[in-house]
Length: 222
Image (cartoon, rainbow, N blue to C red; front, side, top):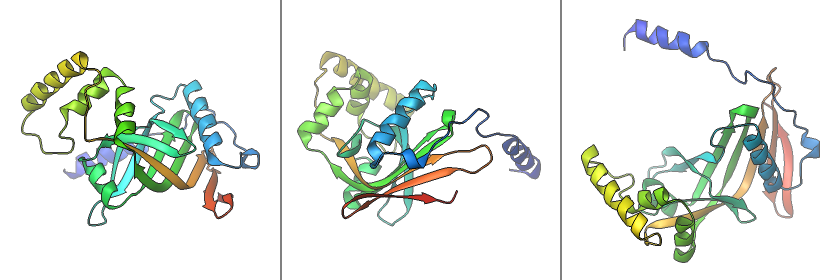
């Protein structure tokens, strides 16, 4: 890239604005004693505010050399056990979680200037739970899972098209078709942070940390 292209990019980047809207207030003193009810409330408020795809999140893991990796995927549930998601056990994230079963999640809801960070230990569900998770989802989700080979090198788009078409046909004909590698995961949190943006950059950050006798909360500098 030449200098002109670089300067054009930088100029474009600097014209972008954040939170060009009225942001909600957040009083951490009124927050619940545990993070899950607050997550549920913020999620519902994100949906009401028109946040596109509020159920998408980033998942960060590390590979076998300790190098960080990150991707976007869907939240499947958030309950007393933790934050739920799923993938193939044979995928890159599946292999990384099998080797080092700790991860971090990140949610960003720009409509309200909010983000949530979750860190914890990840465990894999049993086969029956994993298959039930898959078959509760859409035909497209089952077709994608049946296509398989996630994270493997792809020879051509034509190869993908043929495999996908076959997977769609099977998913429509067999809505309970098993996918042995499909695995449900749950991240049990030991730390959850809620971030509320502020137009004057006096952001509110409330962190929950799991202690010996329950959750402990503390405020963080922006």
